[in-house]
Amino acid sequence: MYALTQNDTLKAKVRMAGIKAATAVLNDPGRSDEHRYCNLVIKEPMSDYWLNQMMFSVVTNPVINQDSPDDDVEFQVNAVFQDLALAYNQTN
Image (cartoon, rainbow, N blue to C red):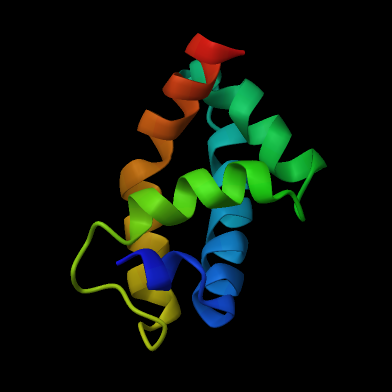
């Protein structure tokens, strides 16, 4: 599983899905408790800080690998996004 977190193809997919998710959450006033994390993702799109956290969460789904379609990756990013955002708020 660790090797998947280092896979450049999967990282690119997760990065784009993370930015897409952050943009969607920022447009949802009901999820304002996640907006600080969204701002981090959008302001620092090339940051390994948030990407590494997201990678480790995404690869816990056994269906996800470097060949996974974008839709599957986006689904998994969306599934873990709120947890990552709330954890970020607690530590920052």
